[in-house]
Image: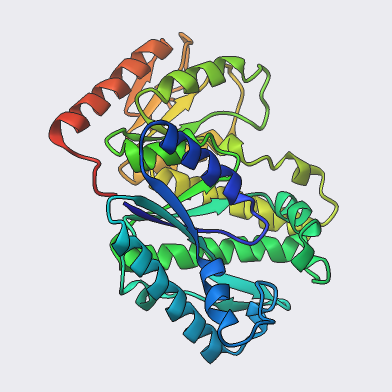
Length: 338
């Protein structure tokens, strides 16, 4: 199993990958992480000892191409030497440098090996900017939250294009997502992939009930939780341009999470309006994704069940049906190919 992990600099995806690595080793799995940029630097030292990660984007396109090809070749050799090990190869699809994009990877770069699937690790622009501020190689660089938001979108867009051309999936995973999500994508692919939809806009109850439900759901499915990226800080953002950018990306991100899932579970524990929940279940339903709705109330509008495949009054009944889907997938051998 080979996974290519894309992300912007400063995303701190290594925290996610390291936790998955430790879990894998604890469970007797053979998993290694290879940093693509580090491999490029190793190749660069043969040409110029002064080249480091902060200098890479300053190199001309031809030199970048040479270093990139050498790095991929070394990675392929490493994988061939130990084919019984699973690998996460992490890197960037692009650079955002001096207020503009630099394309780093394209579909032809994966001619020597094709990952089983891609992931794009995502974090909020504020998280990324805070991380970059303490990185030595970025202390003299000028980049703001708006540019980070653009770079993040560029990483997702490029990974989507490449993965689609290779007939593979590109999964968005927040760096603050429960690491079991990535672990199960690798080692429990028969689990159905579930997007959990719930109200965050006008929530009147705590998340305790929802969190308990999600924990149970993870026993039988791979859950993508939109709360793993905290965007509350942008609701009071003075920069209206950045606020609009982040809000628009949030909608596209959640739609992407739905599209990469097998079904959507809507959890409505309180009767409050949520434009996000309404939009998400419509997007899922009109794109052929089953929508299961937890709705423990007796009265509802004719519109409530319209974009829903099945309604439930008890959380346990949803868990039971998802567990049934998992059992059927395991029995049929489905879910192995991403």
